[in-house]
Image (tube, rainbow, N blue to C red; front, side, top):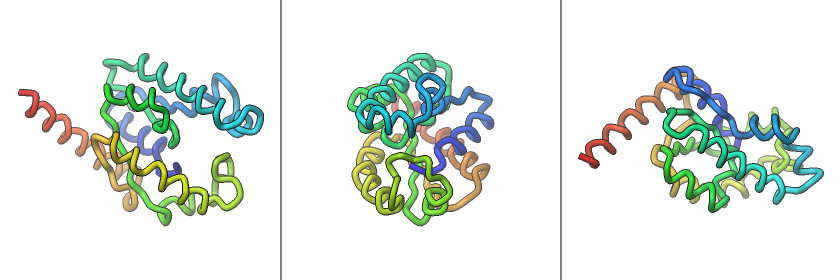
Length: 169
């Protein structure tokens, strides 16, 4: 949440000449504003919509080398976790200092209403072990520009693919 998934994902996709899909954008295009979904239908309904959107995006992207950005809570769904087993998963590692300014600028995050930083710390403590368990590649996003981080991620993915290929042979 607020780690830079969309910006770094777009950068990586541009570098690779690959399609980019942000599942939050897919949800907004199909169901309207995320804040309105939370307000009108609740988090549970949003998570159900999100899980269906992720499943559709992953299915549509199969074999295409698509860069997909998931919402920070998407990985809490067990079905989504299973789907991600077929994908190369990147965890953008950050900390509270890294995201504080982004959270302060963006009040449109429904789970961060009120004391956004306190909520982020609580949510992150719950999510971090899931992120770490699912990740094939971890990228520290605490330092560097989006372009630099995109290049670091591209290099890390290349190294991961080479290591995976070596193991398979």
